[in-house]
Image (cartoon, rainbow, N blue to C red):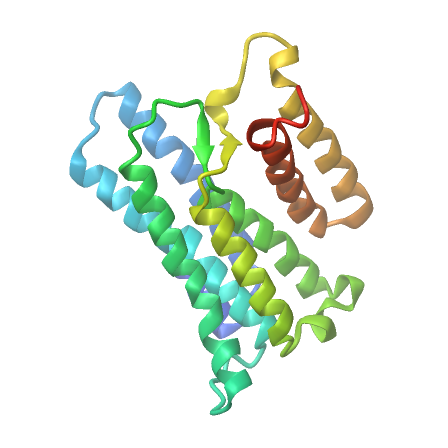
Length: 224
């Protein structure tokens, strides 16, 4: 429901409800599975309904956010550029759905995610969106009709969503201090980024998480 309300807010340009709805979606996404496991009421249909809700909240919502930023009027224009600006954002929803399907079929018993999880991707896009609303760094003019940047953004995000790159998850938490160094590094960089760069610091935090996961788990260039 919160995802649908967020989309309504984006279409009608009632922007203040969007981050609230995303926060509600994040809280519900965390606690629904937790409560189901604790109460032993897990079911196949519940799993599928949870994924459907995630496709809306963490697939369609970020798609509409990109559409809102890169095409503020949200109008379809009968030109090559207009086609790109209107359709490309929705590839995020398609790849998010594929990412969630892969997650549901995952057989590897691992403490890591494989590919960027959809809530983190939504938070990364949300950070830019909040900065765009405040016009930090003159983002409104910079992103408006910038189809080249949109293509680059969509390609990068969609690749991260469906890649097999291992990334830290909540299951990666360790009892020892040293084992949690990646989370501490992300937390410190995130805090500093938010202090200095405000909303877009949230996006930088997620990018730090992705980069650290790649350096430590995929390339093994760092040992933390």
